[in-house]
Amino acid sequence: MQRRASNHEMIAPSTNSWRRHSSPSLVPLPVGDGEEIDPDALQGRCRSLTQERDLLRQRLLEKAMREAQHEMMIQGLQNQLAKLTVLSVSRQSRYEELLQAYQQFKDVALTEFDDDDM
Image (cartoon, rainbow, N blue to C red; front, side):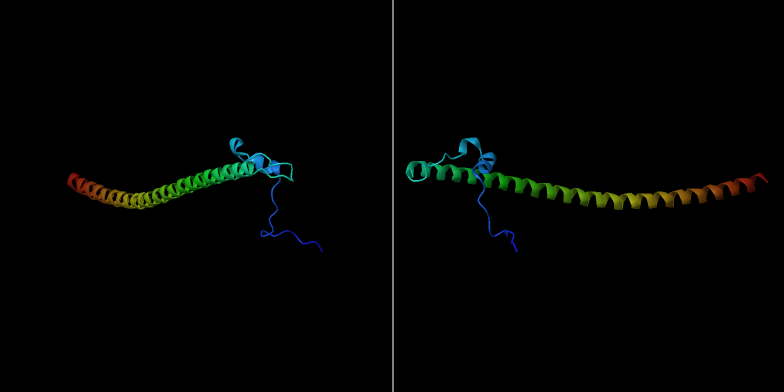
């Protein structure tokens, strides 16, 4: 039976994959021919990867902050909508009360007017 790779057993992405998702100016160049390691090239590669990591971390932080601000704005708008809904229901109820009072006044006034004509 074959076992699927779990999340803990991560496979390193291919060179093409990380080049595709990396900033062009920060893409490290291959170091040596596999046998000989150039310390300067390796150090440069580490620096560029560190810069890219820091840049991505900063972008992620900015995105999280924007999302938090949007969530706060949405919550504020939902609260305002709830208050306006309550106010609208209250005003509708008051309008119906006034309409009913006007109708009663009109009925009484018409009755008195009819009584005066007789």
